[in-house]
Image (cartoon, rainbow, N blue to C red; front, top):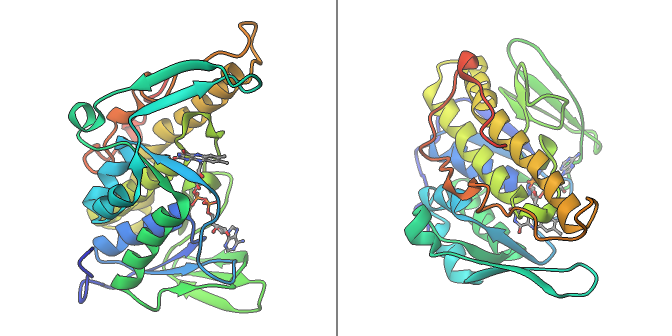
Length: 282
Ligand SMILES: Cc1cc2nc3c(=O)[nH]c(=O)nc-3n(C[C@H](O)[C@H](O)[C@H](O)COP(=O)(O)OP(=O)(O)OC[C@H]3O[C@@H](n4cnc5c(N)ncnc54)[C@H](O)[C@@H]3O)c2cc1C
């Protein structure tokens, strides 16, 4: 069980649009560093649907740091191997195994989405029981040098210091985005949720390290863009390989581990300033 961060919440108020895996991870990471967050979710209740999701070591580092890794690991089934099958015949194309904890310093788990979401949501609400607003579908926003005003389709508005919503670039003035809103990817590397969790961890670290929002957003974007966009493009290439869209026909492609994606640690990766931006994925 996570220790609630009672008395640890300080001034800037951050709105998060979307209470999915990325939004909740961002909320928890920001709360960890003392920020007040408010989450607006369009659904009438905060919940996930769907099946399993792989949480690989790169994302487990962040979940462990934020105090929910143990719960997620306990609720996950053991994932000893990743099996790639032909999408039409079901024939096994490749089996990938590793001692993940020993090799990467964190586990590899297949967890039900509902369990992962519930672990994040209860930790966030443990820190602040009133920070989630359901039934709030984001419509648009205005911002100036002082604040962001978000408007919702139910007619309500909310003022905050910074916000997160889908835009063409990660950050614009007092607004940034993460997860699928920033870099939607195909599911063929099993990394979309993991990358959203990485984004969340780095965003919160950037806030904790910077002295202005502009600096925090710049650090976040510069640290994350090469990594996240690189994985996004790699997931497209992997989709082509697995679905047989290349001259080679359907084949196992190059998995996330072989691409070195699990070696990334969002808790310790250096925060990058503008001049140091570079892509980390081929
Ligand atoms: C078949 C499949 C398998 C996958 N398997 C894996 C896997 O094994 N491992 C992995 O890491 N990733 C996997 N992914 C990817 C992963 O599910 C996504 O990348 C991840 O859920 C992204 O999180 P997110 O928070 O950015 O977006 P979401 O989870 O989509 O959350 C967005 C939230 O925002 C809310 N919202 C949207 N618009 C508004 C609005 N206007 N106002 C208010 N709220 C709004 C939505 O209701 C939702 O709750 C898979 C995806 C698919 C499709």
